Length: 288
Image (tube, rainbow, N blue to C red; front, side, top):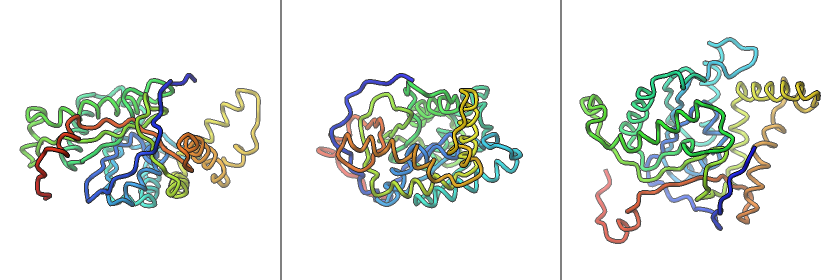
């Protein structure tokens, strides 16, 4: 795998008090929000943000040795348990079929993203980076990222899906976009998750069904390479804690060393161009 050269920020970005504002996290699959940015999700929740997580797909194939219907049920239940650990109360399932979004109608997927934005009226949104150029081979991630990127501006046009307006929704503009990925194209913001890392680990372990599928994939690759790894064999049916800590904690702590903190999650954040001007010269509107 190649790497992206970037000048990382020199300091972590503090999480602002939420003051009841909405952070809409759009997660292609049940475990994406937790595994990618679970530490920051917990930090947003702790800071008073209303974190809303929307899962796009139904994850019906993300299991090993389990029927589709049971996989769907388990994934939904485990996702809610995991997000509850992170402080999330609002969870939406769009229920699109997993692993085939590239075969779907892109405009319909974008419409669902516009609907989410107009329904929840978020101050900020977080999802997969549409410009993550290295290591992203999951096309569901790519399709969702592109749909959200378009929805962020088309949600402000009253001629895009006027049926939403007939339902009582309104055009809405989002101020901040917190993109995550493996990796993001350019890191602009790093969040210190030292205080929430263990909650992220606990939440990740709640996603048992997809985790055991990940273990199986690793076992298959190891077998093809001609090796047997005892830790993978043990994780297939046994405790997953050491495995999760290895791929959750170790990278976060390595990134944290660059900033002089215990653990970090990195983002590419895009902010409304006039935000600082508004803070200096604009007139605050009364909060509803």
